[in-house]
Image: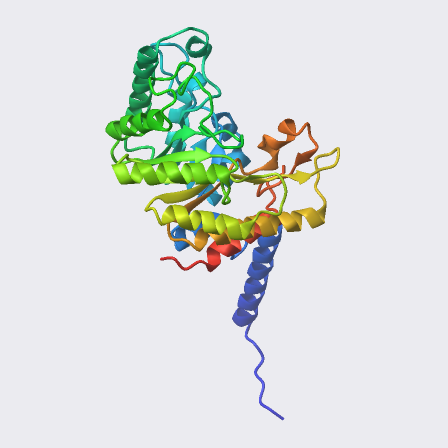
Amino acid sequence: MPFTETPSGEMLAAMRYMTRCCWWISFFILATGASSSQTLREAADRSGMLVGTAVRPQQLSESLYATTLAREFNMIEPEDVMKWETIHPAPETFDFSQGDQLVAFAVSHQMKVRGHTLTWHQQNPKWLTGQQRTPEQLARILEQHIKTVVGHYRDKVSAWDVINEAFDETTPVKLRSTIWYDQPGIGYAGKGSRYMENCFRWAHAADPGALLFYNDVEAEAVNPKSDAIYAMVRDFRRRGVPIDGVGFQMHLGNPHPDVASISQNIGRFTALGVKVHITEMDVALPVDADGNAHSADLQLQAIAYRDVASACLAHTGCTAIQTWGFTDKYSWIGSHSKHTQGAALLFDREYRAKPAYEALRKMLESSRRR
C-alpha cells in the first residue's frame, strides 16, 4: 500500500485557516455581488471608448447612486444644469454652482465631462423669451452666453453640444423655428444653417481645445433628418467651420432599432472626418402598474443595446456611448409616457444590473480598438 504521512498539528491548523478564508471569500462574493468580470468602465477604458451617462447633481448625495456612477462610467453629462434657464437665470447673472459640482465630481473620479447644451429651443429663461429684441441684440446675448459658459469651463469640459435639435421633424425637413433662427433670430433668418455656424465659431474661440458637437434626436439612422444634418456638416467641414462631431441621441421607443441603417449613418459621418457620439441612449419598454417590464422584453432590450454598441464600435470615429441616466429610479421615460413605458436604462430602481448592462459590457469587453 502507498506510504501516507499524518499531517502535523501545524499543518492541520493551516488547512483549517485556509478553509475558513475560502469560505469567507465565497460568502463576500455572494453577499456583495463582487465578480472577477470587468465593470462597464473597465471594459470601456480597455477598449479605448468613452461610456457616459446624464447626471443631476442632487442625486450625487445618494451614496449608492454616486458609487455606481463612479464605478461604471468614465464620462458624465449634466442633464439640465448647463441649460440656459439654470446657468443664465438673469440677463447679467450666471450661476455655475451646480455645473461646478458635477465637474468637481468628474475630476475627483477621473471622468470626462460633456457639456450640454449651449443653444436649444427649450428650457430658456423667461427674461430671454418674454421680451422683444432685435436680431442684433439677440446675437450679442447669444455670443456672450456661449463665450462665458465655455470660457468658465475651459480645459474642464472636453466636449460641448453646441446646438441641440435645430432641425424639425416635418417633411421635407427644415430648420426649426426658434428664437435663435427666425423668431426673430440672430440675423440669419431664411439663410439656412448660417446662424449655427456663428455658434460653433464663438464656442471655439472660448475653448479651442474642446470638441464641438451638433446633437439631435431621431437622426441615428439614414433618414431625411440625418440627410439634412449630413449636408450641413459636410458644408461646415468644407468651409472650415469648427465642428468636430455629431451626437445621435438614440432614444428608442422600442427594442428594434434598424442597426444596419444606424451603422451606415455613422459610417458616412465619420468619413467626413468628424466624431460620432451616441449621446442619450435609452430603450423604453412597456411596463405594468408597478413599473416592471416583462423578462422577454428585457432580453430584447439587451440585444438593442448590444447591437447599437456594435454599430458604433464598427467605426473608429464613433468614440462614445452614453445613456440618458443609468438607473430606472431616475428616468424621464415614465413621466413622459404617463407611466405606460419605462425600464429603459442599464440598472433597475434598486441599482441591480439588467441584461442590457451585461450585453453592453460584453460588447465593449470584446472590442480591441487599442
